[in-house]
Length: 374
Image 1 (cartoon, rainbow, N blue to C red):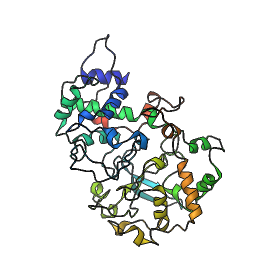
Image 2: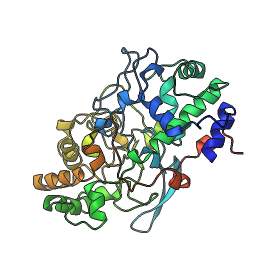
Image 3: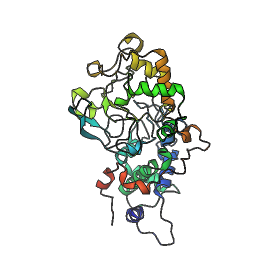
Image 4: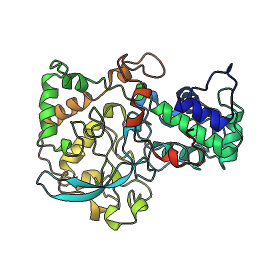
């Protein structure tokens, strides 16, 4: 009912004979439409490939203007709708002490409070879809067959953003059907012996579970991240990227980026915010021996804020790295790895978005002047 009212009040009344526009389907059309960029040729799917868990296998993505490129590796959109809003939170540590830290938010530096705030920005980024303003986007949308007629560029942009959010909230982006999920549900055969050893290493000596939680936190299933910020000491590539510092202005946040979910991490190479490490094994070797073999990895942009407490000298053997790597493969969703259609088809028992509507961390749209309820 809310979606029907939203469409009616955003786009003008429609007759009872007309079908109410389907926001997720409009979002799917926008996501795959290469005519919306300037020049035409680039869509959201250009840099978020379904074959790579909706990430980009290139280190950085070229823009619609082929002379321009992004500065970061485009992250996976799987489970992105479940990332909590950007906030300064108090965190209880295992030793009982309490600290405050930034968590959540979209983009790798958290500059978008939530998904609604994030999805509209690539349209107007010069190194992405390169549109001049909302009027240009509205004109392009009105020329399509799938987008409802609107009275203003602001309403068109609002509706486009809402539609993209609803699409990214669709069951196909949150199937929770990996071997790890089956193992959690009681199928002890879902992991092989190497993966079971890797699970124990993940929990203990590697310390992965300290930031990539194996238990549910802000969702009914684990999202495999605390969505906190850290400077991992990524190998430097190109211009320095200040990360979270650009949002907070705090020098202690230089070079910090949000911890991603590890779901489908097998499919999302290359790795780290700048795509500087090509393979998942390479990432594990980097975490394991970064501080012991600095010449192998080269310099990093902000050495003064690098985390040396939790990684860099883990003391893992080659066999333990192999077991850990095999366990990380168990985070790959079956519906993604074995898809036979352009987009994955989620399991039939995946809850529909409407049944979970109030659980999604999606608030910014309600502050938009174009948002209406009744």
